[in-house]
Length: 232
Length: 113
Image (tube, rainbow over the protein chains, first blue to last red):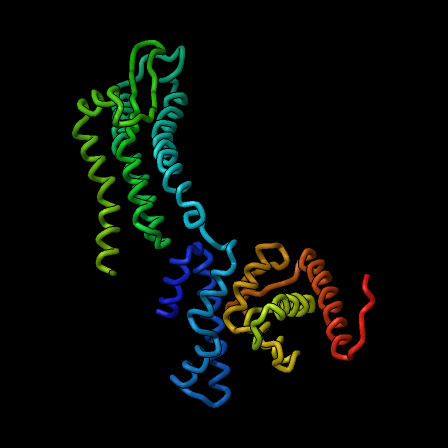
């Protein structure tokens, strides 16, 4: 594919993928114009293509011009500590809120949750139990996948997604749905540290779920590590 | 451009803004027009013009839109009001510099302000 080496140089230099995409697209269109110009000048086939490519500039020149524009660097390249240390727990909670929030909204809409709410019907309790389990199982692993994908896409050092994954490993996102008669039902979402004694009982209780979570957190970063090894 | 010294820095930007003041153009067109207007004395590197265009757009000096003309889709750039003001400022600086260099080459002296 055209400009593969240039793409790698730019991504490794920290340029945001969307700016890389736009630059390469315009370069490609420019190259088409230059090639057409060379053909009009009497050069044909590969000769025209080589002359056009030389006029466009070397990969080093083209990369240097873009890298000099600091405003096109991605957030992950500018402040990786922010993206890979602060955002993973925030993202995990945000994903959890999507599950629990939608359940809460549905509960309020049907009148199953709230101070004066009647007892929830069995179908809603079943739905809530499933959504809570899905939230507990997927909120943290989905965050890990997201941050590994960011690192892979932007060619960032492996240490950053590794830090994000390790951070997510020590976090426990736990949501809960308790149903009781006459307005006592409630939903909760919490974030805790797996290292704290209070969390151990919960981990022991849900060891299968937690174990599955840990495996799914580790898998993306190990995939990236193997991919990098293969490329090296 | 043929010279890459800091002396010439700012010139491609001035050339781009000046050309876009007249009409909207796409990258290839801009490079050809600059070379043609300056007798190829100023000829921006063909590909390296895009980071400059994108930077000017980000700073609000230019606007861009994708347009299909004659079956070819390209990004066309136009000057904004902010770009017009920037062109004015750059033109004044270059005129001053031009006057200074001319005076220097003629052997005269500029009045010290």
